[in-house]
Length: 110
Image (cartoon, rainbow, N blue to C red; front, side, top):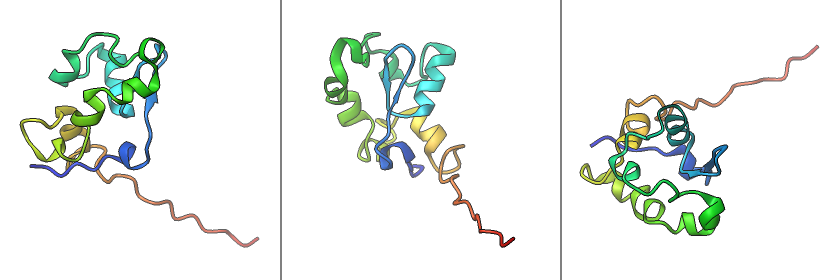
């Protein structure tokens, strides 16, 4: 099983799209914006307003099973429960996994 490194979770970040849907990260938001589905069978099976903050509010959306059980370290260690988006994008070898190299900017003397 690939190790998942979720920069959004570690940074306590979420994305709210132009339709007021709260997503766990930019990957889910961007995939949904382009394809109108995420590629995650569990998330794609939910009602269309499950993460709409206008309908449920931010706190209620964050209490949804998707946020409390689906997007977490426990599900990320179980191949049967792990989000395929998380595994593909943020699992070892994925395009987002540990790709954030610190900038090495030095002040130049003039």
